[in-house]
Image (cartoon, rainbow over all chains, first blue to last red; front, side, top):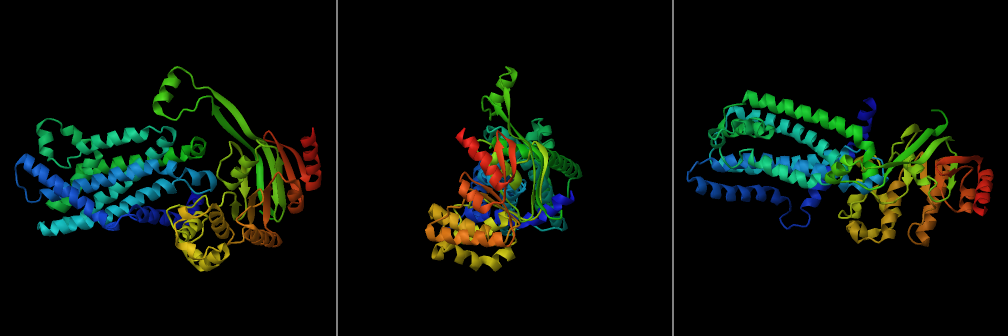
Length: 259
Length: 246
């Protein structure tokens, strides 16, 4: 344990450099650069708002924010798990030649996505101001679901990156699963529709929806955290993190033999 | 600790050579059910045991496939041995594949910080040494060009300059460095020789007997993953040449 901490302090610069590299290189070739972090969610929000408010034929003033909150959190979940999953294979050349603690790779991929996500929150804030969402004292509690989400994606990322080394087709499988998760997270429909149809359990057992629900409750509705969803998402995230760490540590010495 | 630099304690490295390479789920399940996965154990290293004293220069000899590269990888910490344990004291700098940690989309300057971090140096430290690295690499204005546009010689020069910016305690050399043109090669050889004078511990792998004799003072000879001769370099080289002739 002590050895691990010592090792981490030695390589914390590398973690920082890798996070920076991910963000820097992502937008290097594009004219608008890092602005895309803001434009992309803004544009998809507009498309989705138009499509779905036309579809449902109702005019909820805050519907764009409803979509934006769900979509931002889902995108973070999807991108962080996807890039973490591929991180070991993407850095195979390095892993084969230089010693570096291997968890640095999935961790830096996740942190880079998280930083991008935090930047894109500017869009949410701007849209919220424009649409006159009243800020309440509960706004500050919105940090809690965001921290839970970070723990969750770290755990998931460690599990996926480990499994993807041994089973390459997980990459394709996971994108299908991500699509299922997207439709089960009430991003662009209202949960009442699902509940009426008797599929409430889908939302209840979806830990990502618990996080989205609490984020909306604090940021959009100003009614504070839903305790049941909070507890469920915490338990799930911590469990996933423990499992992921265990799995990763147990298999990391075998990575090099499978790359 | 004391005056020991590397301690290899009965290390063994086993590879599972499955007769068919299975890396996807579908095949794995099918093969598992039909019991078609057969593993053939292969020991690349077996019961390798030696210590290297501080300042000692150890040559590692052996024919192709004797396990030399695997041994270096185990000592560098890239691979974990199946059996036994390797302990190294001090900073190990492997001059194996120069520039393996480079990102080709990054410029030379950005890669200095990235590769420096890979080797475990802090950003402040690299900043301090930045000019020295650039000067030694002789890259000049190319330092701001993405590495993907570099020639292999330029890449190796930059890699060498970063890796040797600190006097390492243990230096791992695979063959003698053929870095860049004759001029740079001379310069890098001079740099390495100066490290020898500082009392750096060296692990040197080569097929070139003269080089081994001129650089090393002790040697081990590997054959099929085990040590067959060990001791003074002249003695081990003698055994090696006999093996070559037979």
